[in-house]
Length: 393
Image 1 (cartoon, rainbow, N blue to C red):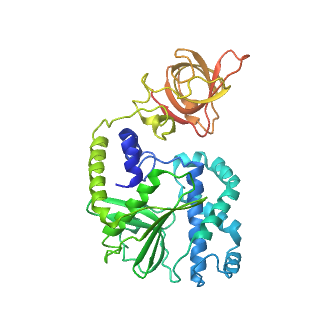
Image 2 (spheres, one colour):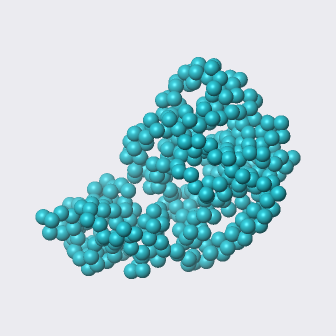
Image 3 (cartoon, rainbow, N blue to C red):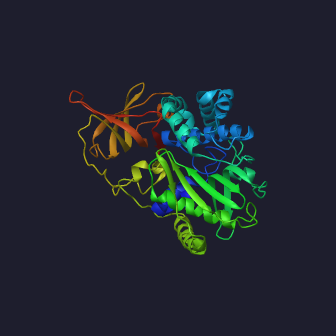
């Protein structure tokens, strides 16, 4: 169990079960393939860039980016631009083989490149606040490796600065990855880098990391307690309160929540908590049978006057109208009238499966683009690289 799984499963057990099931026909990794958002990709790049720069500075005997000599070290790395560019390449490479990412690789890279100035600014801000031990032991998993790749190399952490540390509490069967752990003379600081807005979930996440560290007998056999917890946001650091005496209470709470979650997601039909705000953001909603019913919650904002809208639609194909166009009947939609006739259009390289369907075939499309105009006789349902397609028959 880990923090992100717990939060997802408590919100919707069905979403967690679908996301973490096995899909051997899609790929050879665990769970359903991710479709990384721009925010997630930016955060991954930021983490890698910071780790690379800190390693170089620490290896040169500097304990802070404020050291005047850091300019020369950064220059030897090629400057911020080169470090961040190499980090982008690493992140993209780590996603190789992900079938959902491969469809949006070029567009994601383009959007990520436009985000580089903001990423550079965040890297600079985070580095300006960091201090580290002059004898670091920087730990990172191999590129593209599975989480369990380092399972057989879990030795006690020495004094220094450690990045991306996997923490485990065998008693409650929990684990988590701390962005940074620094050990100095029996003092311990855990820091977590966040590129988004502050959230109470971030506080609990870091408190859980403190608990895992205290009970990780492999990395922390001396049971060194946490002295300081810090969340590093782009606009400043936030100290997180943590009472060492409350560890047992937090462990009991996590155990109870874990038991409830495991029960909720088990069995052939885990509970689906349909929600008007959360469901449209779920990246496995196209697999959820409960979502594709008339009980699906409508959008919070209701009907919109926009000419172009994103929608999740189920269609029954009627007849082919062109090389990349089908006439179809709408069976389910948030914006289209049920039973109405629409035109389904796609780009062959994005949705090649539609080339081989027959009249009467039923399809589900999540993230389809609905467009219409006063002059057009039929509304259009457009597929793109970001559209998830499920063939029902």
